[in-house]
Amino acid sequence: MLRLRDISHTYRTRKSGETHALGGVSFDARPGEVTAVIGPNGSGKSTMFGLVTGGLALQQGSVTLDGQPVGGARTGVVFQSPALDQYLSVFENLAYHAMLFGLRLKRSDLPAELIDGLDLADRLDTRVDELSGGFQRRVELAKALMTEPELLVLDEPFTGLDPAVRDGFFAMLEQATTSRGLVTLLVTHDLGMATRCARVVLLDSGRVAADARPSELLAGFGSTVVVIRGRELHGIEAQVREAKGPRTLRVADDALLLCDTSLRDVLKILDEHDPRIEDIEARRPSLDDYFVSVSGFHPQGGIQELEAA
Amino acid sequence: MMAQHAAYRLLLPAYSLWLRDLKHFIRQRSRVIGAVGQPFVIWIFLSAGFRHSMDAGGTTYGVYLFPGIILLIALFAAIFSTISVIDDRKSGFLQGVLASPAPRASIVWSKMLAGTTIALAQSVIFLLLLPFTGLTLSWEGIGLSALVLFFAGMALTGLGLVISWSMTSTQGFHAVMNLLLMPMWLLSGALFPPEGAAGWLAAVIRLNPLYYVNALFQQAFFLGSDVRVAGVPPTALSIAVFAALFAVLTFVSLRMVHRK
Image 1 (cartoon, each protein chain N blue to C red):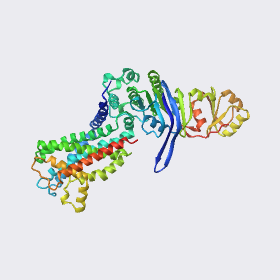
Image 2: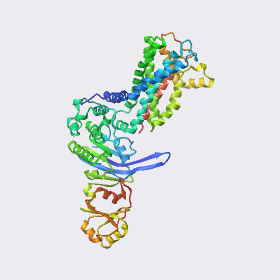
Image 3: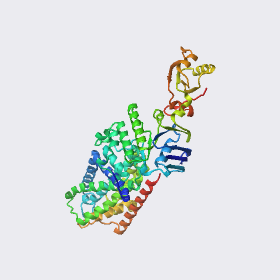
Image 4: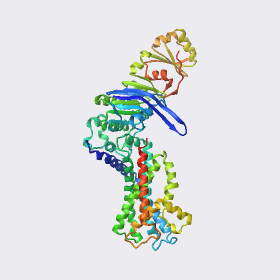
């Protein structure tokens, strides 16, 4: 079990003085589960990542893995920017990385299950700069898993991947986590991927704003939400309120989110031919909805206005 | 995969990073061509250009300049070996190394050894020009100059590492190189001895630690030959300054990489 307790971190610079990045963050991540850490820019995700991976010195609190301080050979790390050497082949990258962990690696020592699972067997002699972004990510994951860590920490590993590759990568990650009993911590902006994780920790302004299973976070949104896009949304909000309709969230200047409802119910309240409505969509709630409702920010879309009706 | 002895865990990461640096060098064709060609070009042009303009103390200017060019090779090897630290930091490779259990000292030793290995290999290639100078080296001179060059390469790479570790742009490093490292070589006695220079410049040369490294290297290089370089500082002083330079740069580099 990865246990973060009362972590606080302050950056001190001559130019901007003190910046409190984390203030009393505590949460657990369990073995065999992928735990997502999400939050808007500046929420403290990168600081937390630095503290867990040893890139930053711990100022206050503790980070332990099964009661022992984290770090060393027990931790595998996948960074946002690929930590691969572009001039070396896939095998050289793996072998040189293993040496950093005090292990000499021959080709026959490569764990076949891992290499075959990541579809790298035919690419071991290929130079990394000749691989696609998706395969470079696979090499990253192979590097991180090859040393048989107990804790795997990933920072935005889906950056630059197309949806199909991203889904495949997540499936591999999930499979490795469950089969090896890894504690996997996934720092991400990708709320679609976070929804698929066993647990989600939402950081906001350096504090834990939520720590639960995705289904628990989305419980208040019901099975369906309706998103309305259009002009003069105040009028539409008033119309919904008058009708004592569903809970309404303003998620953008031109968008309203109606929780725990159906398209039919919303259309009953609103005039079907209301010229102010440009688009209407019914869908399952996602973590994006939760994220906006809690923080008022969308992690990929900048600042959004939020008004609870 | 087999876990090795604890001591191996210290050396193996250094070996891994050293080997990686060498493969990097070899696989960058333009870098190899530049590294091998540049000292040839500089030596040929300078020795031909100043052929009758410089008093080289009883020998030709080409011969006087020869060890200085080898020192320049070590300087360039150090610069290019440590400039990669900035690229590694940008590309994310360095953070992978820092997050691994590899002792951070292994970064320092691997960089120093890689810069030195490249410098030694380039110097051997440059020695192919030796027959054109008419100079014959003694075996003890070759052995001793290889030893001095080894430590000079280590010290200069340490200097490059100290500069590059905290830098974020390669352009910035080039600026420092032009402002600090190249003048250090120009004023090391490699191009001209301090004796004939203006008083203030001679004083600056004598304050330059690379002057003592160059003096020691010249003495070692010409050992057993007919060439006598006049006006060199006492050998004991050169060794003391060189040893202090090496110790300080190694210490600072090791301290620096441990900072989080």
